[in-house]
Image 1 (cartoon, helix red, strand yellow):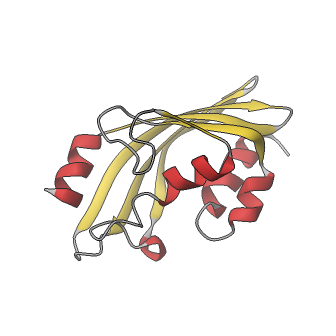
Image 2 (cartoon, helix red, strand yellow):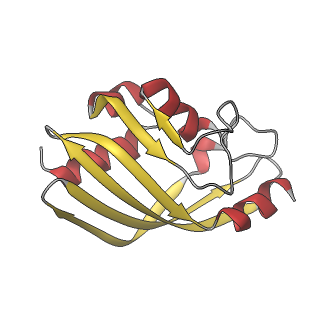
Image 3 (cartoon, helix red, strand yellow):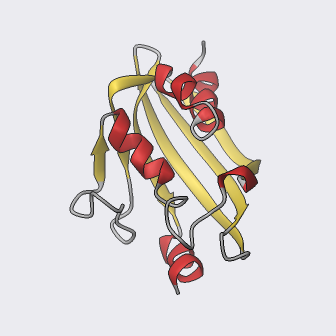
Length: 137
């Protein structure tokens, strides 16, 4: 499987088929988040290491009373998706509906590193203030 396909497998299955997403990741997979939007249960760190911590980041928005509805997630608008060596850059616009019925739209950029053909690290860049204001403001 090429690196772009591996990254796509993780994103397309993270909420619908987490075991398939997990199979595309290393045991020590790490999700690096923004400092401005702490992840519940791990507020003291921006590095979330291991599958359970990785999945906790993915699910953090849906577990909130004001969070997103997973079935409404869309990220069809891909702005940039390129691979070189063991790195993939993936930029997209995500849309969904929150539990309060609000429309959420935000732009994301992920720098993904692979090791032995599996995702080992993802660092995300996005407008966390816009998300915080919509979800909690």
